Length: 307
Ligand SMILES: O=C(O)C(=O)C[C@]1(C(=O)O)C=C[C@@H](O)C=C1
Image 1 (cartoon, rainbow, N blue to C red):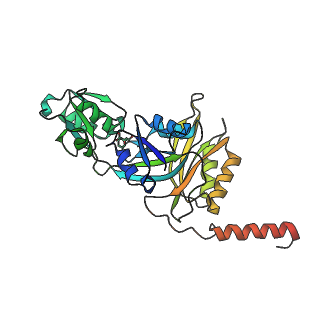
Image 2: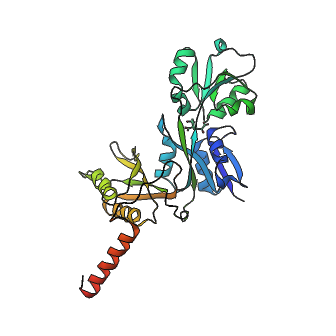
Image 3: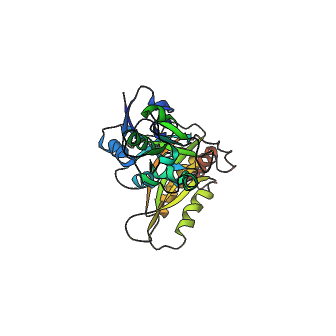
């Protein structure tokens, strides 16, 4: 039986996303206080996997996750999950909206309800805590007047909703990833995604264009690219990239092998079934068959001189 860590306690969006994964069936689910401690549990061997947020449709990337993936002991993504997120303002029974002076929540949640807070609780002090459910737990313990959490946290921590569905942008979605220690990827499904980090060569003009060209020339569609500081010196960035396809797809493997030639370093972060949208058809000249044919042709030319 496997142990899967997640950003806890119970009642976080991470917990809900984990419960929706096949891998959670029969596993021991281990709540952790922060993204970093959930990831550390995998690195130390205390857990076999960790489910952590990677990006949100309103607030963007979760830097703690991207940075842990870019540095430290290598990890890979074994699966992804998309979860619609909505927020309630939760408080202990008997608290009125006018009584709320302190509100606890996760920074990504605060960013998604900022305008609501300004309009409805302009004087309240907002405390950033490790997770939305952690804020609800602390509110139940009397540390804060209210928490901004998933609706499910009300029942779990004995709180009441003072306001429901308070997000500034309805329909927000968070993408979570299940991280494991490096392992062979799950089999190709025909609708997969591959994640990697590319470290550019220092002070080299056109380095980003070179990376993009390797993908574009093989018709590999990127679904996310963002820069993160390497934490070495100012101005030095790496690129966190998601692309369509599986490392075992010829065009994807070929593009990543080409990156290895043009980048200072490439960190492969896994190929796994894609859970949003469907990959379009692979254009002619870029299919697995096209790659195998051209390689066989080259071998023949090299061996016999006959084309
Ligand atoms: O605090 C939680 O409930 C989480 O699962 C974390 C998290 C995040 O890091 O983005 C997940 C989804 C919401 O967008 C807000 C917070």
